[in-house]
Length: 383
Ligand code: FNR
Image (cartoon, rainbow, N blue to C red; front, side, top):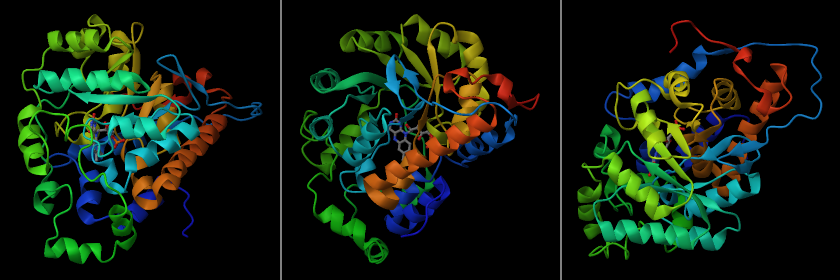
């Protein structure tokens, strides 16, 4: 077993152990991938201020996100097809998150259904919703989330149309994987993945197949999905979804101050400053660059969270110091899942927690709630 010390180690193992099609699905961004790359490199431009001779004993990274206790301000972001990175991937990730004391967010486009994740977990989890045109489906899935232990709804707003990732087109991304010659040749080296997949039944989109009208198999699912992302989404519809749900609501995909203000107007409990990990609008600014202007606009009225580009505890610390009350990791935990299943997700969380705890200490802070902008050195032209 290789020694894992950082998220990059998990990424290398993920690449080695997961079919190319699904690794590439994770490790790609829209069009030229500029935003995907800058999400990561912009974090590197912010530097940390080292302090000495401060009592470091009794440190804590525990805090709250939307009033819920978390062992560190990090949640697992919703990631579609998690169950294709590893069999039962959503269940494995949810279990790792609940043991670690951080929220897990299940995607609408997951392989395991809300009910399966509910059955295999003991603590509440969050559910991410895409706004679909099919009203019956929308009402039905919100009800299913209410019937399960879902304690917050994360409504994703930056995917009215689907961004293009060249790799997915070239690989012919499909669920389940089609037995073409290149796929079979590639699978020969990924035997552990293949064996695990053979042993599970859920190789389809569990939240949709059998629940949306007319969707009983993969063929009908693809036609349905292509038509369903609602290009007419507007703030009235968001308000209606908030009323239907009635619980804590997190709006995801905010990158602009104007939109952040609208999110406050509809009564969001939190917003996520996010560009979908660089998978939607290529050329958009990185999330970390947009964080402070958005906090300046609405930070006193709503919790501001962030995702996109977080690969380390130092990144979490920087976002927290800039005022984010929560962060999300997407690829960082998917690398772990693809590398080592549930143990890999736990490893990703351990790595990030250790980096966060130690970096916080070396910046002279004992408690995550005392972290502020004073620990940062930010280039003047950053925002
Ligand atoms: C995503 N993301 C995403 N978001 C969402 O709301 N619903 C979804 O189904 C998905 N699916 C998805 C698949 C994959 C493979 C990735 C990498 C991402 C976006 C995700 O929630 C989050 O915004 C980004 O992953 C954050 O960026 P990092 O942490 O991956 O850099």
